[in-house]
Length: 125
Length: 281
Image (cartoon, rainbow over all chains, first blue to last red; front, side, top):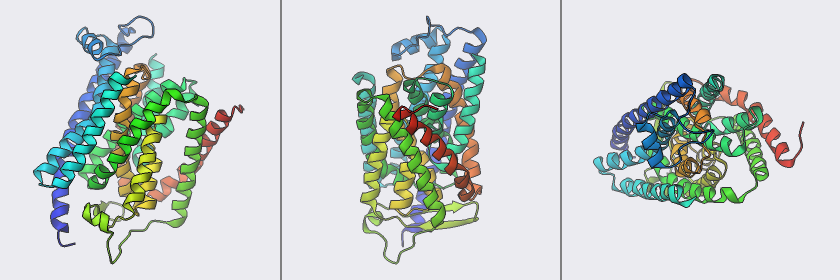
């Protein structure tokens, strides 16, 4: 228990850094989703034929550039999906800064598994 | 169109508040509402609910990190188990009949209500042993949190790390398979097995749910399971709800909220089990 005060203070700093970055990520994706939704409700058009939607990153980015509501909404959702990943990346940096090597290793392992999952998601199905 | 958006926004706010407080994620609430209430195909309901889980997690974690409620090391260590589980679960989805998904989902809800009832009976306790657990000490998992309801710092210890790790793997599989955060499993792993107090368990579960869900969400995102007209207004509602809920959770004795939720979970869970069995009312 001797190292507890240091550990607690260290964790508070780590948590503050992660919390701030996470907040930025969440607000950004919320704003993108809201813009897309408002455009969709205002125009009544998704920008795509029937009930289809863009399902490839290229199509989503192109559609966003062309200001198609569904593309912007999907981009916002994708950004939201990435916020926990962002949180993990920032955690590695925060633990590294506090010289907690054990948790740099643990968090890096989580990130690698996550990247494998993302790759399976894009190319697997 | 605008009406659907408004309904989803409202559903989202409700699910976000409830999910943030209980640490169970919006999925448990969203999926039944979408399938039973709005007649949406379970495929799209699962897609929407996995987005709900991420929104609940990220929305509530902002406050839980700032107010020092959750245990970041416990979360990071256990995430190894949940992310591997989530990949396994997501890859099993196309293989299974929705009927079994309903059954499994219903049983999960019934199970989690029973779990809540048990916690209610037992009351809250904080583990303080003379000899701390070896693995927990080595991994620096023991922590403390500030309880706004009791207005004091609460130190606690963690034990049974391997058991908690195993339950977390199961929680990951369930998450990938059903599109839920399986927060009930996560809270159970920390609260029941690892003897963490309820508030850190719930908030740490919230944090972890996002990472677990992100692992399988990309699968759903690119296979067309996510309908933007449903998912977007719902996610926006949830973000608002989760921010509010993460503040309410800290000042409320969770005992009250638990009492309110036991019958709700039991009711929805029972209905889905019957649907899975092919019985209609």
